[in-house]
Image 1 (cartoon, rainbow, N blue to C red):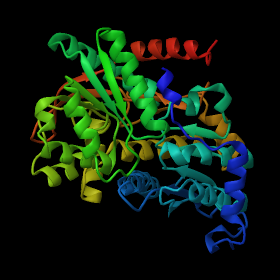
Image 2: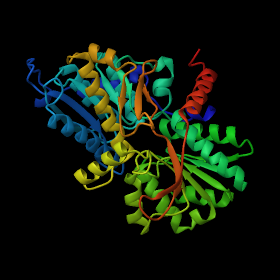
Image 3: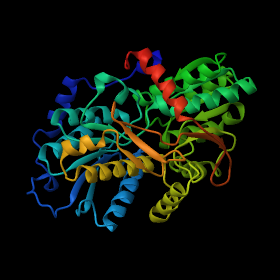
Image 4: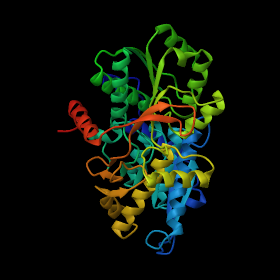
Length: 432
């Protein structure tokens, strides 16, 4: 697990305060951030921040679709405690300082009641400090870096994480890969991931569980392209030159599509077996089909949002309704954002008021039934210990060229997942 922290850049508290100050200094608050008078009939206002420009804009669109789906469902039923929900979406442009500025302005002005952070881990770590500093409830919808909630030193009573951390997500992926690799004798591996906390964490977690199930696996090297890397050719050349059996990639969104497309030019995916944690999401499937002409077969991938997993009517109805509403299939990011809304709404109802301390108390240990929930109960739990969601569906499979593009589905057992997580946390000294 030494690779988890390697080359990882995080803001120190001093750097965070400096970024916050420079972000808001000399700027007038926009009209939506001006203080408002309390009224039981006024809407519940939520600020949602994410990336809406550049190659990573698929993250923002999915976040917006998931939250909009929840908002519209709630409002059609009369709102929460008789109050409508209004969500305003703002673009961080993938910049840490902009994410901090937007969150800090909203929290400090008290113009909004809650904040939904749909950013990547790179921004989410800094936004989490806004929650701590201003004692304001912020949901981290998309950040999957393990230490965000696993490390007790990072614990923040005002921050709740919806996205599954890498150490939970990659147990199934590592075990799935170990079983297949052992059967086929795929010993030599290369790991490739974006060069920031999330990428390193996903690679480290996958490697851990691959070697637990298949100790003979040999990691030849690790490759770390920058986020939004325009040219993967040097990395592809290294993979071809190493003559490995398999590759694991934690690339996501547009970067993953670029890697698939550029690798296909060199026939790379005919030479090595590829394992990817989020290839099964339609935010990658649809652009990959457009870029490659068809969806590639024979790639091993994880999926967080697919009509056949979890195989429940609740999931299939949600998937179909979302597709009809937005004209495109939802991804795991949509699902995580929608789930964040479900948790917030249920917590407000349980608290019986729009009061942050009361809602925080209601969130601890809260159980909800959701499309993302693992059968048969389909319940998700907001774990009180670390404010992260457990018991969501974790599936892996093999790609096929026709809808729904995945077959031979493997779903990890949560009993095994939590046992593996406990062992990891104790090794790190994060759980006594």
